[in-house]
Length: 339
Image (cartoon, rainbow, N blue to C red):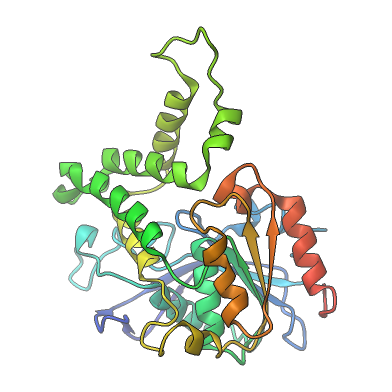
């Protein structure tokens, strides 16, 4: 992991300024002499910049995004806790931000990464992609720097956070606020609330069929030891070992901010700015982004195509269905250099 520190104040969309912003990032491979082999991957809500670890089915030698051919970049988002400035960072007075960390937006995340792009002297991004909130960043970037992006691949995401998305996120934030330790401003503040929030989130990341397959109930099961119960508890505990409630809270609100048409004259006007070849990959059982939401990609982005893949695992299919994703991405990029 590498760290890039901005030398100037970073102005948020809200107008607030952050001093000494640091961005954690990973790179794989080398940029070529013409600079046209860059793949920028944007990560999801609680992921980090080590994309070769959490997306190993797509990133690696012999994979669709291959460091032997491509220069692959993944940067940790603003507000996270994996090296980039966030709620557990120090403010200009030397105090930890905690719940006072300012609200950020998807555009703020992208603007921070544009500063990193400039630092890395990248003048062309051949492919930008990501799943879920990573797809939010990708489509925003394609609007903000349309001449820079060659190919845009939107996976299990959309062009705005819907009322359904926002309601799910607020329900999770209610769980965090119900944990009074969240307001005590210490690194473990709100941790129990975050465990409950994660368990709630997982229900929308999967679906009834996935739970019935992976957490089956037998007729004689003891009601105190049901698999679905232990699984939900395990998922909350698992996240608590690697994340914090303050970042979770900030990033869920950033998720809600996503609307590419905001202050741009609406969705259609904003999406018409995109010049990249665009592929949307929807998951047929995705509860977070159902069919009607995904169709906006094809409807408004010029010459975009939208394909659906099947997964029994809902939204989380973007982390699991490597074979289907590889085929869709390879087919889309086969006419492009290096793919």
